[in-house]
Length: 397
Image (cartoon, rainbow, N blue to C red; front, side, top):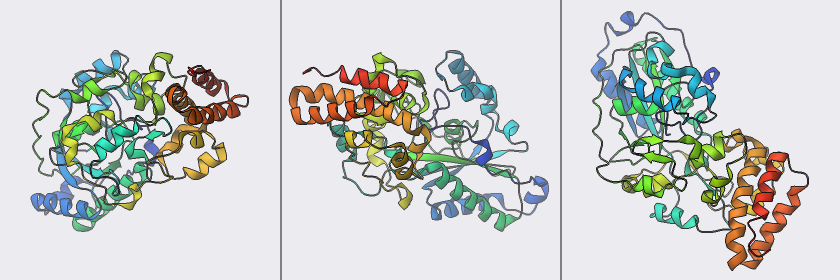
């Protein structure tokens, strides 16, 4: 997806280096002597499309121009408590140090906008933000965990290349190691970095995941794409918490995606009301972006909506036991945050919904109160703090 490594990470970015593929690296000179590299580059685009990727490009891996911005972002503390972002430092801008011998990156994108849904999906999603009975879950998280899907498909693409040219050195990545995905993707012409820090494309918007294969094959690199945001600032203006401080600079500590997914402690009280009914991630900046009228629908069934997450009842979700949470969310990216943070997020959403419903929908307000009170006494201290805050939002009580 969606990498905000500079100035911020993707909503679900975590470090899982053990999950990446790292085959033995042969002598690259012996691999490329008799290979038509231009033909190989053209062929792998077709192979990628057959695997569900809508675009494949080749990027040069020299990212020295991005190091200063990365280090300044980290020094400002915008990464919050995502310590893994700082642990790797400038190595994120040096793919050749991460995987010695790397000279190119095959950069790929895969659309995740669910195949089924209203034509005017952006308007539909924005309208749901005003429904106090419904929990809003980011579009990318409504289906299967993208890490597994993309990693498997990239591995298949690497195997197809190996069939064509013989063994070569490579390593597959999907939001799982210190790789500056947006920087590599934009350098290879998959799109440009938008003012919200996500990758944008004129023909595909931003509703896609990103993945890479670092290779030791000197494939012809594609040119970067020029930015096309112009004077538009809709993504900045719509951000509920003001997390996009200025074009291309995002303070993850204020981002709802960070707060609901990466942040482990209590959600700062000043940011709870702006969260509204967003309980896992936030799509607002993408919903506002005009380029997303061109967003592609997913072609893989993996990203079809599960668990009714296109319009889930918030009080019902709050009633899930830990066993139900783990069973229902098997294979979902949401399971990574654990049951406690799931309840924390829902408690905030219920508090905001209670504030709205207590003035206009007494029956819904009563159902929310009952759901909060039913879980309060047995809740962990973290969850109870947010339940108490939620109950305090009852303007009728």
